[in-house]
Image (cartoon, rainbow, N blue to C red; front, side, top):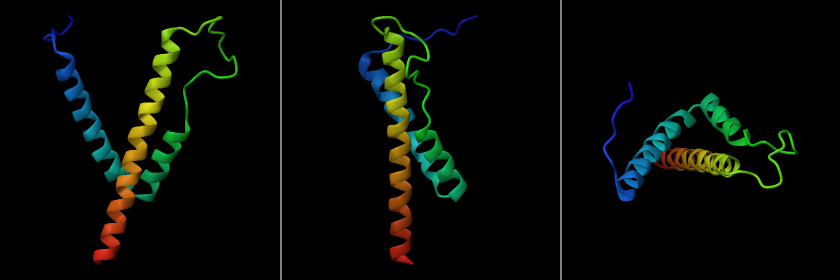
Length: 98
């Protein structure tokens, strides 16, 4: 049984994606406050699932799957970077007020 989703405009989809992104950044910021959590996020940012060096031969012209995978990896890194940056800023703010 497939759930039914109402049709959404591009603006609605964009708004929902931005909300999820903000929530993820907030949660990851909290995780990054702990040294182990920060290391885990930094490792995630370094890891890649992109096929490289002809690990799989995509043919003469890579298909859209590879392009989509690259975009996803870039977004993951951007979200993690935002969370780490926010965690650093919050830690600096706490240390100046203490």
